Image (cartoon, rainbow, N blue to C red; front, side, top):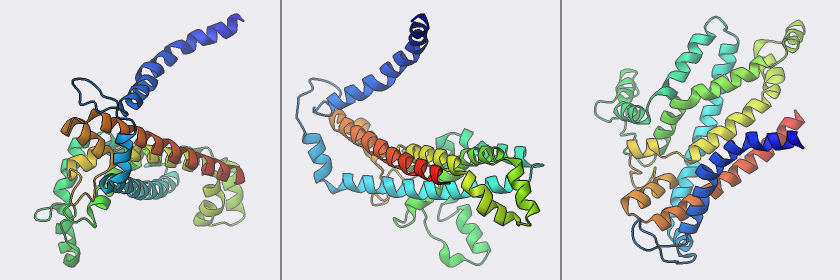
Length: 289
């Protein structure tokens, strides 16, 4: 009995922090989402009006679609690059620590710095990307990357991947380190080449690393607004206008606290549903490997 009470006492601080900074704000946002609160004055109950506005106006559904498209591009590219980098570094222990530190460096930089640096790289007049394309004879591919609705979202996705691929690489490196050495030695003794050992032995045993990476990158990317806000402000033609940007614009631009709260609840619902589906699917895949 005393042991059970001590466990509760040790978990009480964590539960208090969780309740104050997570559960209570969500409950308050849910309550506010049914009002027309504007930050000051009285909050009038409007029922489901804010949610009906979200469903009936195409700009908000488009923001959800942009968010999902951006998340898919980031997760796929970041996972593939992280896996490639980790596989290479796993086979090059002499430079592993140095390269891991280099890959982590962008993640330690401010979103503002990264956004403005890549804004300059994508610049149509003096940007480094167009200059390199001209230099190697691919001048026909130059364009205003952030000013073109067809490329702006993917340009920001590349920036996001560049910033956080180090995390993905580190998690995959941990997965490689947990593979028993006797399995790799058995593969060598059987005459398997490096790519064969990777494809048939290592890749199936990296299933837990795939689960962690995909879920973390998906949840983080669904909530992102810094890079689209800094680099394009949601343009051009709302091509990079994510759901998070809509929340910020309605909250601090239009002072529609009630509607912004409704958008926040919708985004929370999307994040939870996507994470649950991914976790269920990836855990089943782990069990089959």
